[in-house]
Image (cartoon, rainbow, N blue to C red; front, side, top):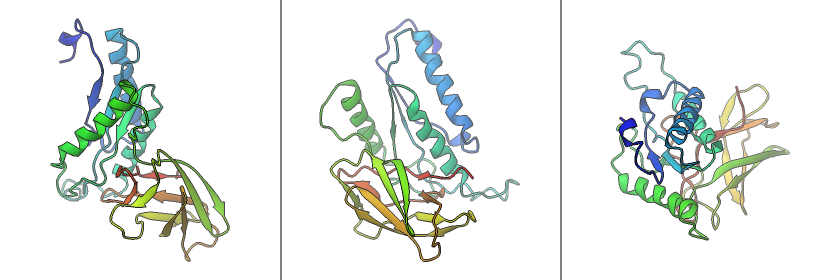
Length: 233
């Protein structure tokens, strides 16, 4: 399907796919590298931009039991993790869609927001529009401070906020026993402080780590944070 286009010049590509790969985890990242590098090789036009969309939340377990598949709420977060890892490929960008989903519809209808967010990446990275916030918060690092975990992000824009004015949600903390517990998260300047009475010595934190998670953490430009985890369990 792509080969007939090769005689023509290419300015860049946008990509929105992955539902059929949802159980592949980090293998999907390897496939993305092969796809992107393969296209760039055959076009021989350098590292042309490749912007893609992270899958929206969806209840993949609805028909799992009927199909003989063990339900697992973490298969989609592992694909999100793989898609986020693909940002390490040069000249790529990722749109997050956790806030425009319908967990009972695998294809959310709000494509206008998807197109707008893809356009932000293109305007900022391809057309050199300066001072444009083009991504929501992406996990950068964390540190343990007493009974709390402090998280820092890239792409915080003009600041962090809750999209609906409610307390931040979908944060969890685990101790060395690897058992996660719901946690309270508060904004402290440009960081998020997470704690729970259930874990006195925190070891790891995760955010939005469920296929139906629709978290409310965004930057003040309204772009949502991508789910993440700090463990590799």
